[in-house]
Image (cartoon, rainbow, N blue to C red; front, side):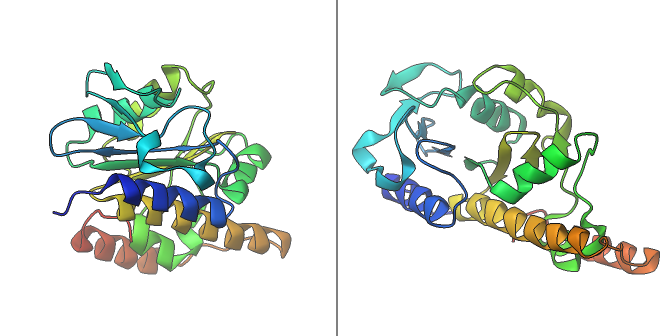
Length: 215
């Protein structure tokens, strides 16, 4: 599997910003490198103008090797520790996904049973309980959902996707916001009606047979 480069992390950050999936210095992206180090975006730097020389590095124990890594690095470390297949983590602030968690604070997952593409591409999307940004609780609150789920809404905060490649993780965030925009429109028009039970089972089986990657 081809390893992501530092420039590809910067490219993903620019794409996230261009798609309004984060603003200014929001969000963070990391990649597990072949030598065991984790490259992660720095704290307090706007993602649209990030360059390879801005990257920070840490090891899987959380020891900072160089730079000033994101204040939310504990969340990334929790993913790498719980998910042996993880090679990249993307945390962004997709507006509609966040808005859904604000409007429905008691929801524990997105109502994805109405969207066949979401089922096939990502499966069920849980909503992880709120944790104060930058705290260890961000990683702790992910624990019940890992490694089964590769894409999650973080209540009142954003979203997180992990993948076997950086592109997979990015695709998860893009997929999530697109789905939430559709669900928002459906809600405004009267509600999203779930697919019939037999069709849901068929789609879930197709997802199971097709693998766990985010598409």
